[in-house]
Image 1: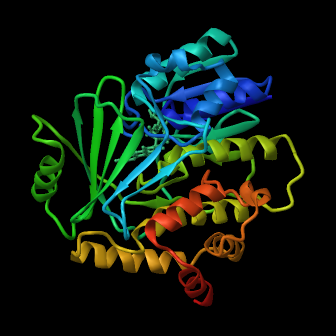
Image 2: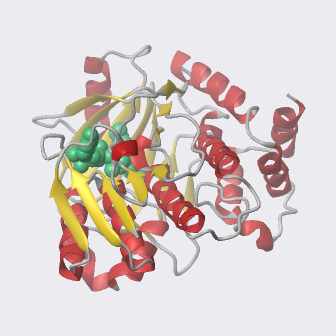
Length: 373
Ligand SMILES: Cc1cc2nc3c(=O)[nH]c(=O)nc-3n(C[C@H](O)[C@H](O)[C@H](O)COP(=O)(O)OP(=O)(O)OC[C@H]3O[C@@H](n4cnc5c(N)ncnc54)[C@H](O)[C@@H]3O)c2cc1C
């Protein structure tokens, strides 16, 4: 069997590591050297260190090679009714990592295996590739369906390293700022909405929080889906599947989930639900995880937060019934641990849901309102 992966960004390389570990297939990774991978995407959930450990026996002592600091959770400041921490279960950790160094590390490890081939080239149509299976991780797609999110742009700066193992999520006047502590720097990004603040205002507000910087990067962040995935010979993963804002670092966790689903489908593991339904529900759950943070507003009583609450409330009303039943059980404190793994909820366990519900002040009556809609 031959698998061709299009794209040498983080999603494509995670796919290559996964399929190298769990198949004996010939694997080719094609990347266009004139299209650089994105430089952002440096916080993970728990699936990334698990994948690195499975594929390469990645250990604590390897963290410096990818410029990484363990991630114990997310430190929410100024959201909802109180500051709170969303932390991972004792013994579990995620990663804050240097995206460029992670890509170099995975590439080096896969080249050593001699079974993964890296080729320079531009793929015009993934359907034309001569392979049994194709994982499209090309970072984009012509079929974009834009999704309404509270935020639509980012200002990114780098500062010296700090001593922390938590991602900062600081509510701001027109959005929120992430702080990702890395070994050699700290990456801060103000994720905001251009309808409520100019680029200059966003930069100044970010500088008030982290101090002035010589340079910054500004980028548009238009959230999108790329249509239904039926689960045939070609799967799309990473930003070729969808792009949502970075709150809770759901992107690479979802890329990993898609890779594992693709393995199941291609290996004809019995599945009771067609992939298009699982995929649609999974993306809705990821959107729910992101949007529930905006439901109760923040310490900032600004037009941005009023609009964010509206978008979040509308989004929560669209999620599937199975998810709502689970969310109601969490709000009632009636969930049982056996439902931790099903349905897949963006990599979150029930404990994550519970911590965020409690921290934000989300109650049974909120979930019942979404159910009634
Ligand atoms: C501000 C911001 C912050 C973010 N923070 C996080 C975070 O903390 N955690 C997280 O999980 N995610 C985060 N994300 C999402 C992040 O972008 C993705 O997780 C991640 O980088 C995956 O990118 P990718 O590999 O899908 O695509 P890319 O990095 O864009 O890679 C695409 C690859 O495909 C190749 N390519 C493109 N077209 C072709 C073609 N036609 N033929 C051949 N090769 C081609 C390119 O050369 C490149 O190698 C963030 C996003 C933004 C905007």
